[in-house]
Length: 107
Image (cartoon, rainbow, N blue to C red; front, side):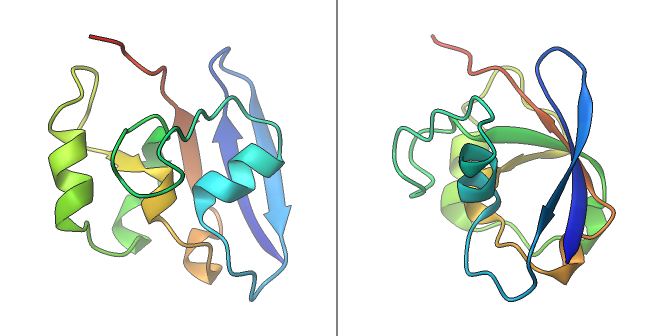
């Protein structure tokens, strides 16, 4: 099993476990786990409504894609640890990570 933690918008941290070899993005797992992820664009890195902050495990994640960087640059509440959950594929590299949900900021 792949095990990581998620901090919701109220600050509550819960462990999420998914089977190894699952072909899903972090966004899809969060939605299936009933976290409030809008994912308006369906995982195309076009909306940033799946914005998360990687509190632990950032260096273990795959490199940013250009579309992801472009979207993160538009977020007023982005940090140096911001990622789009739709661009993070679930793998054993997520073991022990901590993701903090970020509120979608409307402009």
